[in-house]
Image 1 (cartoon, rainbow, N blue to C red):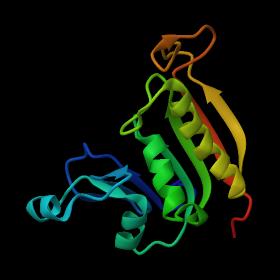
Image 2: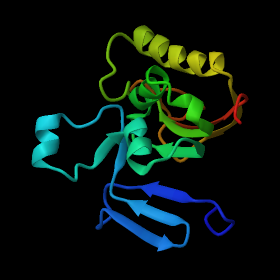
Image 3: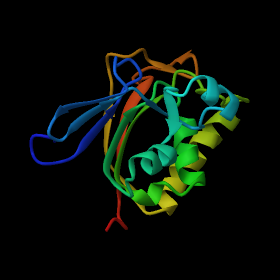
Length: 169
């Protein structure tokens, strides 16, 4: 995408430098997207903390929109998605591509199986109500066939879901 003229920002907490311009339009940042910003006391001790809410990252970089957000948040996707909805960051995103994990509820998501599924469903339904339309799904067959820690035939614990914001300008 960077080679085709797009400005690309890649967030990976394992990169060595805080911000690296690899090519004219490709940035690497030692950050990961989270559903919460660091506590101010922790942030004061660690000024280069590795996690931020997407809205905070957008403000910090002076950006107002994201054409495509592609994220593999390693089971934090449900809480991050909730944060994007609650803080109205979704409207700033044209396409959303999330790898979702179903083998366990995810970080800070708990309760009975039915309450976890209802929580997941409520987030997916909220995307639909905000005019995001699912246009592609991909099942990762290399992952275990688990759903909330149970073996499920012909399933996967990992899917990539892609939505387009039909109100995108």
